[in-house]
Length: 116
Image (cartoon, rainbow, N blue to C red; front, side):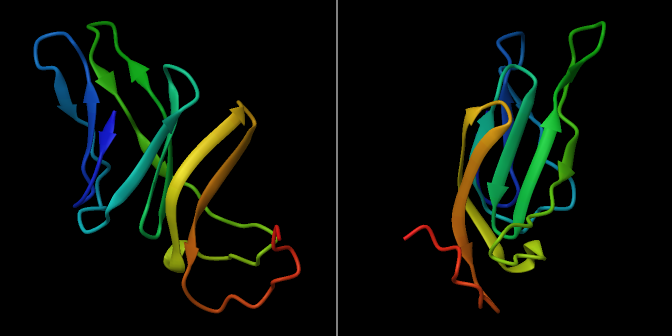
């Protein structure tokens, strides 16, 4: 999978048309910076004001569908809205324990949980 500017996301499928457009609708002005898949089905895309999750499906004819859904960012830094959170990278150590990194642009006041 590859992601980039203007909300583009492409899935590589080596049957017929190798690169299949799987861009999520409604994100045409967003730049995506990273994509991470746990396995061959569950993945995430991070970008400007965006964190999306998908569980990839394949129908009986072998057509791949990636239904992206918005994930809300909430943590100890009091991020209550994705509007100012820019996700730059995503990584998971295990299926249920992961990290995102980026920047939060506005109203950041809780520094008590900074990792340094």
